[in-house]
Length: 473
Image (cartoon, rainbow, N blue to C red):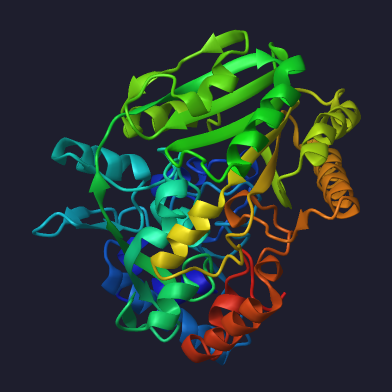
């Protein structure tokens, strides 16, 4: 129905159906294998915000007039793991990747990025000017979806989440209007989009505040799995210190990888060109099986990070959160080993827990930049535990997802026993059935629901766009 609506309009030349190579390109470019198996009826590839606005207005009219029978999806980078996140069975995909122009203002304090660009596009545009933005840790990720989900960066302790560095969103809302949301106009929408996902419209550009470019020291380290708990305890000491060095970005994991077995993993970055700073020495002193640590650019380090999560595989992402606690951290490896055992016979299985600390300084810095809707407070550090699973065959999807839920449920239950559970769920790492919006807090969820009824009174982005994480679920 949605494809037919646009095919009968002036936008017909931008609609591509399954027999066209543009449709095939869109399908193949999704990051997770499961998303490539969802078959949309058509793909709409707009070239500018005006074409998006025309399409959204037509789809709004069609859905309201015919019982929401013209469903559609919105995609930029297509980097969410679960099927149907940015694709839609028998519906229409609005693929905004052609809207990817990057431009800078006269004093170079602001960079405006088309919502279809990747962070690699942005870094490579800015770095020759001696500038950058606090963006994604994986260069290949799309700017729009990542930022609307909050966005953790190497610079988060210094500048907050990626969304906290947005000066302005340009967004097409349900009636086809193109709005500017910033600190002076539509300020409520500006804040809501900082973690609010795709619930308010189609974002067509994002303007970020720039920062001075500096090379970073960092890379990836592989250690014996037996060193994982020592690394976790060192991380806890560092992030719990009131003198935490906010140049440090620490991400630790325990992994079972094909051809390599069980390993501990560290993604360690320092946002100044200082080799092996004191904050990192508890990790670098551990015997390394592999190390790529060096001084390099943000673009190069984030391209490297992306190589550890290349596309084309069946993929599971889930996450949960707890307040950093030594006992809780010590228990994680046992939960990982227990749940790994349940999937160990699945063809091609890789199984990892990746720990992402969020320090109080990140929340303080975000609040100073206008705040967001994520529901985190600056009283103590929290840990987002990402479960990553990859495997070979679709017949094993149900078993892997079941094991994922077992892992998340066991981590959450143990955290509740210890009194350190936190309800926050990081949208960009969430599986389709996780209740991300409720994790922001009851008051925030109610506020977002009220705001939705102002900007989208007919609920187009709640009822006609099933992908993402909805406000009224």
